[in-house]
Amino acid sequence: MSERKLIVGLGNPGPKYEGTRHNVGFDVVDRLAQGGRPSSFSKKFDGLLAEAELDFHRVLLLKPQTFMNLSGRSVRQAVQFYKLTPADDLLVICDDISLPLGKLRIRPKGSDGGQKGLRDIIAQLGTPEFPRLRIGVGDPGPADAADYVLGRWRNTERPVIDDALIAATQAVAVWVSQGLEAAMNRFNAPGG
Image 1 (cartoon, rainbow, N blue to C red):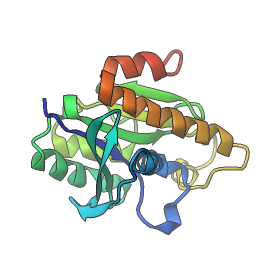
Image 2: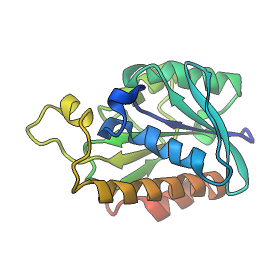
Image 3: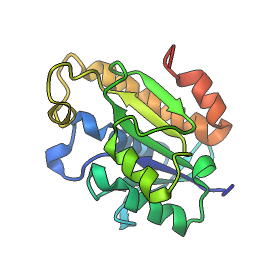
């Protein structure tokens, strides 16, 4: 197990996608970068990388800039460069349409659940064994799922997702300082 932890937020680059459901991973990582002593991002590993401090632990924050469906290349480069063990040192944060709006679910491993960014990371790393923090963005219902996740939050959803982003940053801090089990016990949605 490395001394470093890599926290990856998934999203799509560029102003066109800011504030969309698909970019909640970016939103969490941005909040983590602003906490404590603010960190700035630099271009590295086909992404934007920053170092930050969470609960007195130095962590790496990564926002792949390859678009969601190709996120794995950026993650693989960082994991290999820092010689990280995905099961212990990597946490991926992404949106999930199968979870109710604002609900969090932390898992040590698993399938991609239809999330194409996760699918590419699993393919690039050659393993599904890495923790992921999914943030519920609500069910698209009859709407096209791709259009739904690329859509912006409704005014009525904003307070719920703001609370979820705060909880997600807290969950990441618990994962870094106390481990996966503690984060799961404290932050997983009931029945999740």
